[in-house]
Image: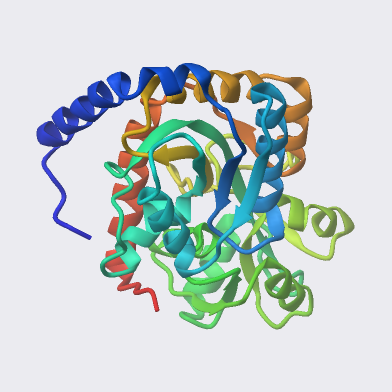
Length: 329
């Protein structure tokens, strides 16, 4: 990725982009949309990312009166799809539902990723935040975060954890946990959450940070033990499970954040229309309940709030990526 501009130059550049976008093709913005919209998902079909995309697409389509086609384009931690959308025409007809791995992790993992999450997109709005849950196999003698840290310190590198893939938030959550607890863990990447969960249930690995919906039933059945959730607040799906921050690692946070983006230069009236409709649907009981089933909390707001959020998230994850020497393939 190209050298990062200093903060003041970046703010001036973003302000200039916003002014230019606001005056670009006002007639087209007033009649928008006049044809179907493509919503690109930067991961293969299936899983929580596609479910979230379809929730947003269905409701936005109803509000805008035009079809929204969900287009899954997986590869390279979502960077391939993000690069393609960044280079698309800034007319509001190609949108990206982006996640933490694509925006805050991949730019540090992959050389020449081809986009800057700060400057190559016009933010429409934040969608939601979904924590993970730290679960262990019942055979591991750990009933709390403190227990797990002690067991890991007594056997450095012997405890193995799984993740859906290298460079995912679930992967880096475990690395952040190890870094903050000053322990060593072994990483086994899988091709998806399902295979990792199967091996965890079978006792082939000892722990993982799992999406809460994927682990909830097993925690309730006692086939997995939950030690903590990765957000700063407790999960509504697991209200009796403490946060990792309150269970022994103050300040620990590792959440999957989702955002709706358009290519930079998209006319401001289009961005504002989409932001208005996005915030409206996030406020409905139906969407909030559907997000809750996926373990997510809605985080509506103005487009500009993305700027602050991605700056914070990219800085914290890139620091960890570089510290552990993580490279994309």
